[in-house]
Length: 550
Image (cartoon, rainbow, N blue to C red; front, side):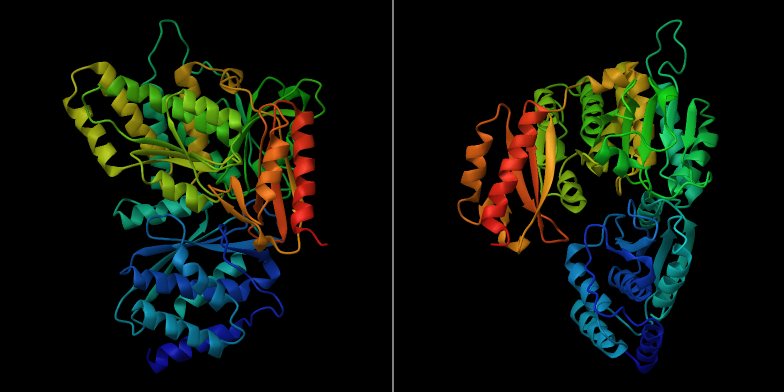
């Protein structure tokens, strides 16, 4: 590192001293905190993004300013790798160390050591490129400026400010640019709209059938970025049966009584929905539009809803894919490997349904990085968390096979099935879970099946479940195995959980340490709500006996 580079980094870092007495750590969602203390963090992550680009031979890296479903006064920052996926895990410790470095000199030392270890040239011989995006939070603008300063303090690094975008759009654009595909927001909408229209055009028409048999859709946009982006998509598709609410333009507050996280956790309708919406298909996006859940309002139910969560979306997608593959594959041909990836939080009824379809269900620990990584191992990898975050991944080998069928197949039935799967691969975001693409895929499949939202919800009935949190002295004392379904340490705790679970019909229970605070999370399900509640409460007592403050 030459003197010019040193002084640029020192000068840049000295503008925003880190907050005193606060230690931040890079989780699944990057760094998140109150926006007022994040300027030094974002500046330093700007430096990291430039270094990551240099390390990957000048590939475009993404830097997103968002705190997703957190309250409006929070913000955060996360990195998208060249694939459009999350920052590689082996760079997370470096992210933690530079963000928490107490002064510019120690920051510089850490950067020098890391650049040397990773063979990153810091002499201006290579160009680095970073795409910047932010959500609609008022604090986003000044934090983007801090990121630009960080990026600009690395010689040869160039920042491209994409303005206000959804988190999945930024990931999509990074992936597209690195694959030499057109990568603007217009290109994103073009691809989604064209592929969606293709799926609608491929619906087998029955005589005398109208074009949109499944009726109106109302979408709660969490008073976030999803509102303005869904409006653009609506105009592009000339989608008359779509009503957008809580777009952020009506004066509502981001994520307050609205959004997918609120709807999924509270199981009530968001603000702005009421008795007049009974019987209508509704959906809810989260604050940065990377999660989506569907719901219907229960008549006279005091805002209570029928929730259609990520597990049900996964099941709908899996069913559709399976039907198309059944049309395509003869016994003696190439058999694509299909993997459905869930976590222990997936409702047991969904796992049973997917297994009955003849699909391979694989479990990973909680966290998108684990789900996505496992899904990449298959020709078609489908993953979703119950919270509505997930996507469908397709291998290049499988997509090439589809193209071959489209160009050589004489059976119209097979050709159309190949065209449908090919269109699905372009509707879904291959980089990351995306509420807008998820919404389009659900709508296309419901129209294809001629299903109402109730038909979809009746695929299976969720087992009643209960989640609890138990405060513990040290969460690291709980060690889990088998994708978090079993507790290995402390010795004896799993036997105690098993003994309690065995008392309940269709009982299942697991415990896992929180990733962020000294609590243990308890999940229980059984054949009735009373039983699920009892099982969760009794296991919470066991956790307290083994790990509580005694």
